[in-house]
Length: 249
Image (tube, rainbow, N blue to C red):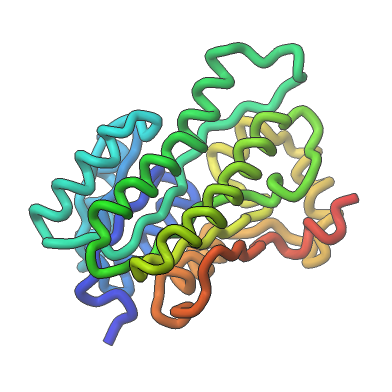
């Protein structure tokens, strides 16, 4: 039997990059997967790929900084499939830059997408995970490092870890586990906007395993935390970074 047979999952930012890797892995292992993306057409394309491969997926469009986006998707999933078992708070928007160049619009978008959405996701879990479940928040190696020109990103991802620990304490009696994964550098579209080729080579050289991560590396850790294999793990963060947080400096 597949690990997530009969379960329903919701993944924010699930149309591209790490999110899409998570969606594909959950679907391969039997979950019905709701995919939220800012651009509905991208979510629909990701859902179509899952369905073409024999899985089940539903696409949703919307800004995850808005509470209604997550609640509308969770409500629809429950109406269609009766429950919610797994929530992956993955969505993020990031721009690196000098501290003096941070604008109110950049700050609002990064904090809204990366932090507000996690809070709304926790509220979704509280309401819809009536038979218990697992929440996985995607943090970053940046939560443990001082990355140049990435103050807001480092702050947001550090905040994700704080939310994870506190929610794990609150949700434990409800049978809901809350954990995080902290990816190192993975060559996705979002990383490409902020990191040039020279920076990529520098990161590889400083990573003990001497390679970048893959979306499959991260999806494997997420699915472990979503599964019964981690039934007594909550409030934790798994670093999936090739060891870079131990060697970066």
